Image (tube, rainbow, N blue to C red; front, side, top):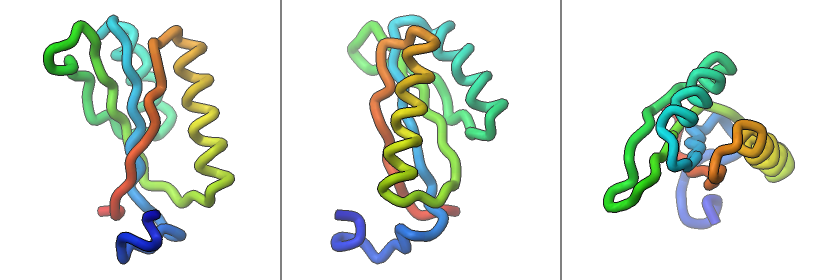
Length: 97
């Protein structure tokens, strides 16, 4: 979809954003510290408007193939489970700065 709808070089470095949700801001802040120490840039923990839950957004410039992206998503889902977060909600992507 990205290849057909954008002019981005999806095979090169891209800015990947990853999202986690939980009712506990403190759990997300602890997860943010660990992810930050692993090379992710922590964009913030914010309350979801109109809801009693919070969102953690981290990002990192990476190159992915479908296989490596699938592996990254599996690793982040396992990270969420290990830290007992409500969910790893997936990613978004944009051009690297």
